[in-house]
Structure formats: C-alpha cells, structure tokens
Image 1 (tube, rainbow, N blue to C red):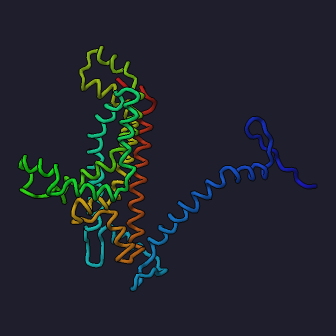
Image 2: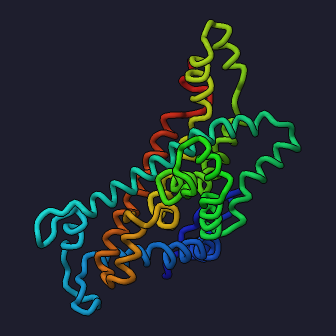
Image 3: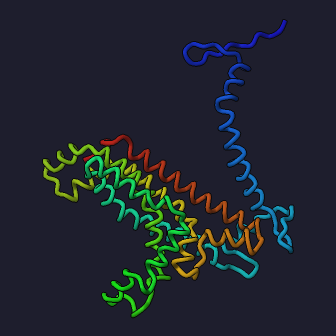
Length: 310
C-alpha cells in the first residue's frame, strides 16, 4: 500500500501535499534563490577559493592551498613585517570615515531645509539632490578638475583670500578629494536622513522645550533619537562604497597614495596576482559586512520612534 502523502496546510486553509508545496515554492521563490546562488554565492565561493591558492611564476593560479596571501596582507612577507597593506586598509577606512563625517555635516542641515520647504519646492529640491546620479562618476570627477583648475572661479577666490599661490590649481590635494567625495556620496546620506526628518514628532520637541530644555538639549534628547535610524542608514550607505573608492582619490588626489580599490585593481591587472587580489577583496567585503552589522545593532538599539527619549 502506497504511503499517502501528508497534507500541509498553507494560507487561507488551502491543503497541499509536500510535492505540491515544493513545486509552488520552486515557481515563486526559486528564481530569486537561483539568482542569489548564481550571481552572489557562487562568485563569493570562487573568490574565497582563489584567495587560498597560489600564484604561479607567470601569473597563473596553481592548486596549492596556502594562507600566505592573508599573512602578506597582514604585513608579514618574505622580508619581515611591512605595514604597507595594513596602512592601505587603514588609509581607506580613514578616508571613508572622513567622507562620512563631511557628508553628515553637509547633509544634516540640507535634510532639515528640504523638509521645511512647501510641497512643490520639496520635490524640486529632492530632484536637485539626485541629479548628480544622472551623470557618470568619472565625468563628474573630470568636471571637478575643470572647476578646480588654475583659471576657475574657485581658484580665483582662493587666490584672493591668499589660500593658494598665484595661478595655482586647487587640485591635486586633500581638499579636492573630499570635495569630490562629498559631491559623489551626499545623496546617499541625505535621502534616508530626509525620510527620518519627515517622520519627526515635533510635539516631543515642544514638550522638552516646555520642560525647560534649551536648544541643544532639545536637539540631543528629542530630535536626534527620532532621526537616528536615517542617520545610521545614511552613514552606512556612504561609508561602504567610500571604502573601495579609488577613482576620485586618483584623479583629484594626484594618485600619490594607494587605496583599497587601487590595490585590488593592481592585483587583478598589472600584477596578475589573483589569489592575493581575492584576499584583499574578501577583507574589503568583511569591512562591508561589519558596517551592515553595525547598522543593524544601532537600528535595534534605536527601537521605535519615541522610545527611550527624554
């Protein structure tokens, strides 16, 4: 006697057998699972496997498993400790943190300003924020070279203020790099922050003010906790891509320093050291994963709007 398949209750009391549910799941979630498997999990496993293999004498990949690539990335090479790659990672993290801080300083007043505009002007302002996305990043960066050139308006103003020498451009340099990074990543911070600002319950700020709190205390205890989810989301959205950015530092910084993105590009390109490039890539992905976990932790601590205030 054939074993009768057990019926499984799904939504709205509909009964399905195991195979019926399997077929339905294959048609509904199967494409998404296949997409993630083929385009995310398989490449990640390939990078992980490549990172523990060995580079051959002519740049080929040899099937000899080793952790030497990670030791080299940590600074322990054939000639002793060399902090070159730890400094590259640290430099990239510092630049990403600096970019996040600059975007936060510029994005905070901008988000509140847009939120205070009338409805139609608000839509115009939001469109202006995302307009930089309509142009390729490389073109925008070259445009900044023109805007910061020796004959530009900004260079003339800086020269009049005795900030630069006569007929000197404003790039390459740290100022130009952070200006380009600000232009590239400001929308990533403003948009989620603006969403949180739109949801602020201003009655809480009024209650804090009625209880005698001054302006900074009202902002710190009544407003900032309400917009913190947007702040954290925006900071993560800026910090993660800024960590691997190398086009802007190259074009506006004079390519004098190697960043994490440069290091990966060099290993997969001129150096033909794919195992070491895969190791650098995995470390970069670990940084991204750490940022996401940090965002999740802060979001959970923030709880629902209004919780833990005052």
